[in-house]
Length: 165
Image 1 (cartoon, rainbow, N blue to C red):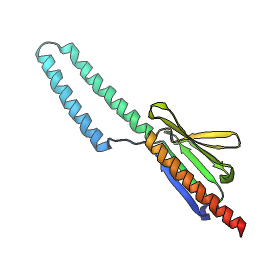
Image 2: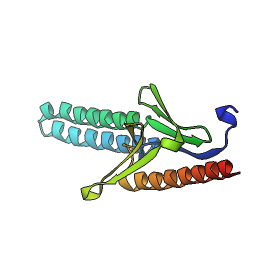
Image 3: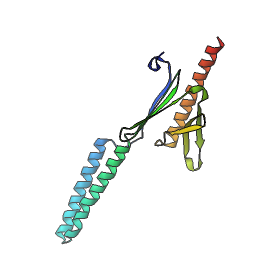
Image 4: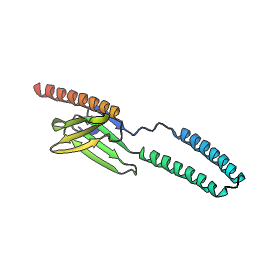
């Protein structure tokens, strides 16, 4: 049976959250540009024209910071648990892909609560581990861990019942 034909026990696409949509970004930048221009004109009228280039510089730096934030939102992780394997495919901000394949029988899902409300989620098998959802918030990572553990339990029950028959 091909992996695409296998029963799927779990699938999730993990992406970083961005609270400001692109339209909101355009509005924020327009408001900042207008405010900067008005304040710059006020400085020019008072004879402090050397200050005005800094108003353009701050708008440029804010724009650059937002663009870098949106670029980092292009990263994602795909988790898929089928009858044969759990696969993790990680896509970085440049489109580069890494893929891990775990045999579910030996797979451990490690969820570590840390102090100050932080945590870590990783997949481990045969002495190797890979962290997942590092760009997610602690609550989101906790939800993924619970759902993934439940799916792995379903997988193990199905395999155990298939072997018992």
